[in-house]
Length: 287
Ligand SMILES: [Zn+2]
Ligand SMILES: [Zn+2]
Image (cartoon, rainbow, N blue to C red; front, side, top):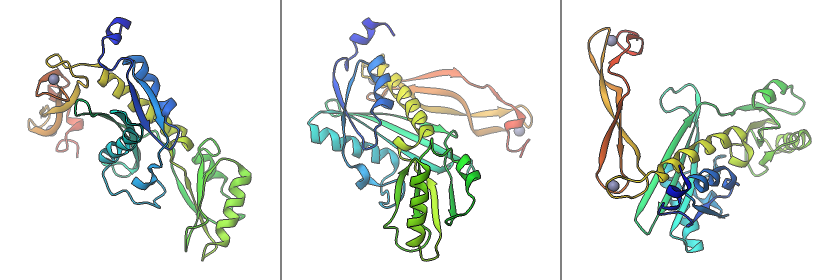
């Protein structure tokens, strides 16, 4: 995008607040400043009240709503009508179950225009694991698998109250001490070691947050041709593709993208992604 186009963007030079507890500013701000000219300031609000990865506080809202609520915390605190927040979930993938995936949501809230522009990025490239163990046990294979100490860890007692939890463990000494402490506090003498999935402790998650930020910046940079409001991008798919093997129309198969505006009803069809379904992707021909 040329400098000229960027400077004519409605958000050029404006300030948006990013509410984050876990050092996400360097991950999220660069593409927004490059593509849109938004200046991002950080608000370090304690967002744990909205739910934590390690489960001390249960999340009550779905990730998208949690992110919007989080963005408003910082906007209200700083009195700025533009805000951002991200929210991630890591666990068995919603579609392929068995494999662990990381889904990152990033929202941009504009209260002056009553807009929420959002993006989602789903990745299987996430380093996460857990192990029940005890002091002196051989755990080196597990530590390689979870990429310690590059990725940080959490240790909790296996049984009983979790009050001695140690988070953000990034050295061998810390890990040894945390295992010993939590084993003493555990009713069965065992501990749970797990990946600390907070953004500042997980480089693989950081990469996924950078990816969702790039997607969101691109979407914000794109204006609707009809109403000129930012946030033009894919909103849905046309589904239903005929299988070349059995000739059936598979209702869930994606045929083409539908692009749309965040504000008005304007929609446009994207290029056709596939006219026919390969039998290898058909649940009848290749169950
Ligand atoms: Zn078929
Ligand atoms: Zn529009």
